[in-house]
Image (cartoon, rainbow, N blue to C red; front, top):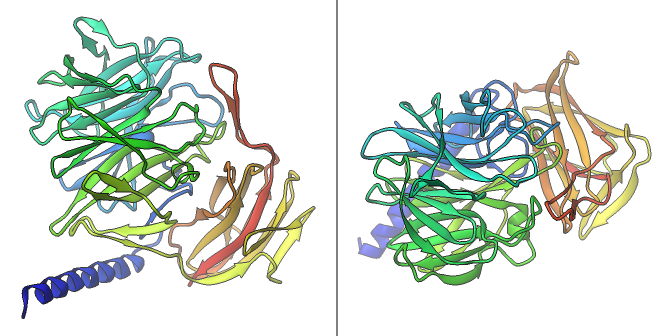
Length: 475
């Protein structure tokens, strides 16, 4: 066999093994997911919403550990940083509140804590968490750190991370660990500091790029090229994130523009981290973004995790996937699709109650309402259900609840359908359930996401609409 043929056969075999592995996963126990899902509230092993925003993931002992902000729907005050673990990046086990609310001080009551990043120190074997602490008006920013002897914690807050004996009074942070084990702190505006050997302080300023804004800093590396992702200054509003490249951390850093199509606002997200999923055959670089939702930060804020295409000095996410798969064994990824019985908005099996009106977006017909208490319901037989909506500038909140044949609640979600531009998107996906008869109801909440920044600029939706486009019943 010629070498090219051998390579083709090997790649074909790897793809077949990935498909088989995904197919086997789809037959897993109930209460699980078998794909990475973006733009929907996810449930953990307890049936609770996964709350880990501004997150990062590290791999330790064969498992992935996700760290991020715990939130409530009533306040932006710090309530802790959560830790979850997973073997496959699809299903998340709640480990603990890795760093809880402190009795007093920078992470005490009525304070803000954001963007927890956990690194393992190669020299000491210790786990170090970096974070941004602040007051409610974001006028007292400071970078802090906490330590733990085991990856899931508990972490002990140590206070400010010092450089030349002084705290760093900045807000948006990121982290990066290079191939040699050296750790780095990233700061908005293009600042990068090298951490001390034990990661407990800062040893030197690596580079100050003097970039405007450049929030949500994220750095990763492939084949000797460093990539620095950043976000514009738009509060929790989505924007077109951009990136720079360099062959050394000291720079020079070259601006490369957007990595998602202009106007998609990074597929309605803000960067948080890039996770290399390294396998035996390839490495998938998984972009991790937040789709913020205020005030319902705990129940309706979601995640956008997508595979990055990385080649030379170019990175891109040219297409949005509601669902996709990655095999941590091989490191390969595959585009996914939610397949099943389609129930469109004009189906006779749907029961609309209230002031629903016809609506359309391109080829997609929908029915929508903005009246609190209006609802629609559907009886179905299957093992999983997905709901598609038309997102837009007037999108609001709705509550989606699934009941079993005994009229017992199986799961319930608050979904946010706000977007600065119109698009069709999956907004709810149940975990796999036992095959059977179910009913779903969608109720209009009559409110929407809206917030202001330090300059009192108003962001968010202009209406309370939920537009139902279709349901997908997986048999």
